[in-house]
Length: 478
Image 1 (cartoon, rainbow, N blue to C red):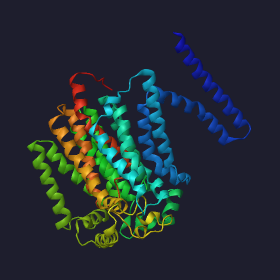
Image 2: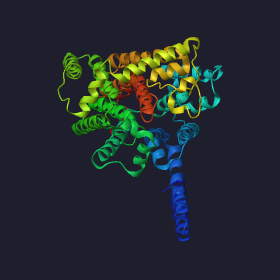
Image 3: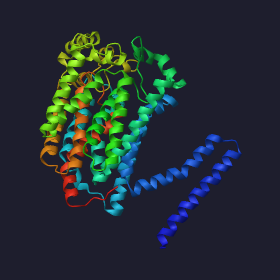
Image 4: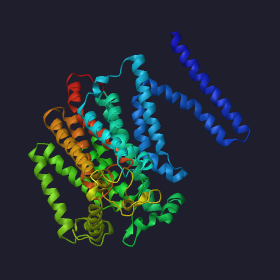
């Protein structure tokens, strides 16, 4: 055993022992919270050490934090916890820099990627929005995630996900998180809401979740709408990926995760989220370049449309009845949204750069009194339009179109490995589904879907390099 290893063990055992002793002392003095805090210090130091050695786990931590930030706020009532996400991004970047200086293992050349350029354009535009004459500095600061998450997550993913196995590992973690969300939805559906959830419903959430037509379940997410979107996103990703995985047990597991997510989508009672798997399947039929997938896919989409739009089969079921309203062009809520958009159009006529970041939607009207905060935006694109103007909306849509078209080109013509092709196809189809669904709901920038969207896009854009890596046998099986 060399000297360095000995020192590491002495520090590890010594730190853990010291922490345990201090924790026992705190408990003896009847300081339970102090004992917990002191007891976590060695674990925190151990995590910092792990992060410096393997910054990849910083990205994994971000994805997990992104998933549980909303339920943490609900159960603790601590506002402003999103700052933890910001700190974690900074810590991970610092860990990357330190690791790079010590080991020289970080390949900084990887950031010379088209996606970094695209995300930089959006970052710069949003930063310039602070100069908008109608902008509010506080609202702009609160919208910091809207501004830089795209760039930050893209950068971290490019630097830390060097191997195909890194992507597979994140996919496995994603599947577990999905099942946790489904499990909580199942508990709500069959056993009811806990005291914290009931309190949230009584404070106003019940208006959109406790309906005459039936209860809409929201699991650990901010609302049933987000629950449905997250589940629809997971359903199409794990369904498509299940057809391409080499190992049989992984195919079966992904298939199970997919249909568990479908169950979550159904009990959420979310109409707009049905667009995610439908749009995903539509894109899959094109990306596959296989007639055996294209024809059945098109037939399935036609059958689903006819079933919901032109029949009354299953109308007694509240979930089918609610989804069917999404196919009705004269549905009352859709009519109201169109009227709201007319009001925004008249107001934004002379505002090509919008009202300013963070100044839209009724959810912020208690902080910022504006005309644009007195009308629900509903759609993600209406939010972009109101806050960044027609110029920002066109830029945003142009970026999304470029991502889908260039991503499809990479998958169809540069990725040869079947399993990798299937995973990247699944990820891009999921992104496309969320893009389409965001027309009717404000989904795209919400936790926990936002970080998984940006990592998915990045994985697709490095697909060619990953394929070459597999071809050169430079990966190790998990």
